[in-house]
Amino acid sequence: MGRFDGKVALITGGARGQGRSHAVNFAREGADVIVLDICRQIPSVEHSMATLDDLAETVKLVEEHDRRIVAIETDVRDHDAVQAAVAQGSRELGRLDFVIANAGIMATTGEPSQHLEAWDASIATMLSGVYYTLRASVPALMATGPGGSIVITSSTSGLRGVAYSVDMLSPGQMGYGAAKHGVVGLMRNFAMALGPHGIRVNCIHPMGVRTPMVVNDFFGNVAASAPPGWMANVQQVGLIEPQDVSDSVLWLCSDQARHITGSSLPVDSGQLVL
Image 1 (tube, rainbow, N blue to C red):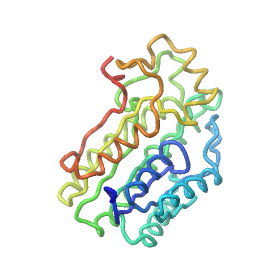
Image 2: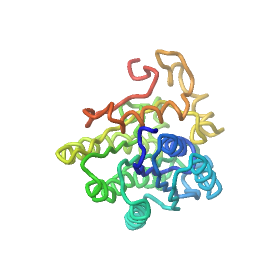
Image 3: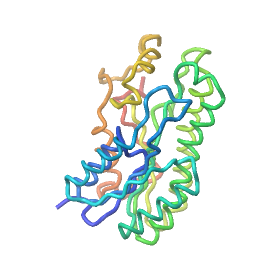
Image 4: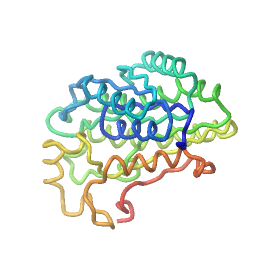
């Protein structure tokens, strides 16, 4: 038996990377999943974004665990599209227990990051998109209740500054940091309002994770030009794995964390204590 038999989890940005890892881990633990992903490129982003083929691979991996999956091509920047996708997924799978607001971009590199469109895309995806996801999901969570868990993917950049030079005060970099800080405010307010309904809301704050968003030449150039210790951590490790983040997400959704809400959980090898 799995920890989440009979449950349903919604994951945004689930076509690959951390989102795919979350979807597969929930399926392994017995949950059916709803996966949303834009599956196309945003012009402000230099790194390659997920595709429909990536989404199909997530579907395959979930189904290998004999679980149901509703995978919908959805841009979280589009309020109405998010509302429709959440309604469709919860209707087809019959309930909603967990929401993982994970969709993210890194419009922080190269010439595109210098344009205001990079700010707009970052805020729209990682702040407005999180709000749209939560707003669409709360009625389904409450209908399933009592109980439920929401986990928002922030970043260590949501708890500290990372701009090591004036050049890094670009629209893309600042949009990323502002969005990742902003979701902490969303988390605290949703936790306060939903606590009486048994719905817990928390943020996770990963350090660099070994996904295509980070493992690419564009981010590599930024890291190479950074001052020594820019991404240092007390455990002296490099990038962590998507599984490391999934383990924390699943724990926050489990009964073992039943009294944890309104919290920020770093998954950072001690990066934030330096």
